[in-house]
Length: 417
Ligand SMILES: NC(=O)c1ccc[n+]([C@@H]2O[C@H](COP(=O)([O-])OP(=O)(O)OC[C@H]3O[C@@H](n4cnc5c(N)ncnc54)[C@H](O)[C@@H]3O)[C@@H](O)[C@H]2O)c1
Image 1 (cartoon, rainbow, N blue to C red):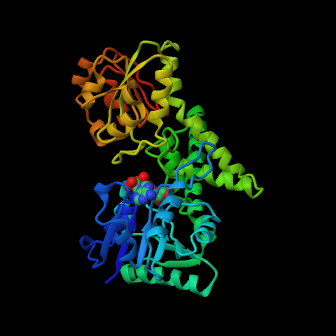
Image 2: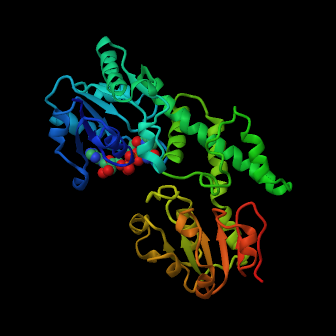
Image 3: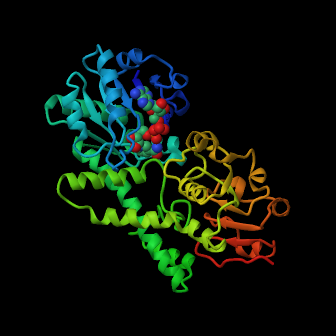
């Protein structure tokens, strides 16, 4: 029976747990340790010493200069190293780290056997993505023994998923870069499309048809095309894309190569985020002080409580700085927002409470609950019937007859009747 340990049970750790659980027909012995006790099934010592492969999936956030912060990974490896008494267990690093990092970590923790295995899942479908990976990339060191550990991890995956998921075995640096190539390519695609969309808006282009005509060329690929849409209306956010492209950009500088495309990708993204606030300021003639804004949606996309790099954060910050008050509702992210904003904003219990007495309502996330509100109830609650929709949730023909001022992205503005 496979003995699997998981250290760090967030999005990635939970998906690994699911993928090796009885629920998915796997008979692995699973042990989970997280610094948050409520997520742990075992102690660190048990997880490390009773597992053949220990998946380490702890965060790798950004430093203030955009470079990757390795403190949490190092702490986790130090903790493992301190309790480890076994000589052939493999530490499988799943946290995203820049090329060259795992080699340095292996030198720092010689009593561990570290293999790098990037994760490509999306937060929206984390568990499903783990059991349906397009490929499994496993990177290791150059010695025969280190290659043997790579093979050991490959065997674990092969026995779990069979031929359906091809396993690519390589060295640490290659595996590390593949992960960044993926995320950097997707962000480039998003920023490219956002730029095309800016041109489309200014030249009378029908964006829906333009997109349709574009992606039908199979070479383009279907993903990350929803611009403006879930990934791109304000640009991209979330816990991975921004930090990963910033980290690779930093590495580029360190090794003497300026990643010009990625820098442009980030500039376009910053511009995208400011579009809604710019529209709000124009509507209110820059007189934001004292106004009340209802905010629907705080997370960077639906079905997650993740607000890291979410557009809602910069919009709220900007409006607060201009003297506005905010009353916000999100189906999942209120606790996370409370940690960030404290009592600087008001937290509402439902979408209607957030709309009560507001000068304008701002929609940031396409949660399904926001798609079909009771518009007549909403009209009765709002002081001004003004909606800025960053997610293009409503059909323009439908909203035309409802008596709102409705400003969405890249579409005709509907004025109040
Ligand atoms: N979220 C994604 O979609 C995604 C996709 C691919 C790769 N990644 C990468 O995977 C890594 C983890 O991401 P995530 O989204 O799962 O993070 P997360 O923030 O959702 O979860 C991390 C977990 O690690 C725990 N933790 C922190 N320090 C610990 C320690 N010293 N010991 C034990 N547990 C500890 C936290 O309590 C938390 O439960 C990051 O490097 C990220 O870049 C994330």
